[in-house]
Length: 203
Image 1: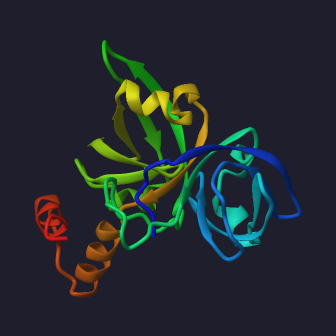
Image 2: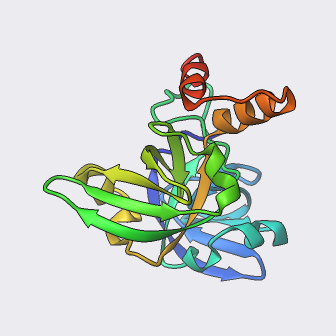
């Protein structure tokens, strides 16, 4: 499990045959779980200044693998003693989204991101979503896209500062929204977003 709070920006040293080597300050051990751009990956090797994770064929099919170069977001797995300051993130990327528009206001930036329509049902207005490993709040939801608002602190401490329209990003929808949807779908009962918000607030 993760929180969606980026702990470090790592530098990709190599990515070949499914093995991704990242230079980082974090001291990882073999078998550790680390989210890299939001995808939970297992450490298979390490040295004093870097760690190596392996991406399966299935992982490469669902991730924006072109972004596993240069600088990447890193978050080690959450410990039971850690504070949950973002939201509960599994590191299981649902799909790849695309930034379709960026609007700047006086003190913030609005990012409009489109994702495949089948995943939009898990995107809750004012709920949580993970974009490239970052826990963010959804402001508005439309048929095939949603809007996020980032403050300067979020931009300055993540790779979002350089994100532009056309960039593909890893998306993980909110775990509780998925569970609630499937729970009520099996009961063949319609569920309003107000009811989703109420149930989510219980966790």
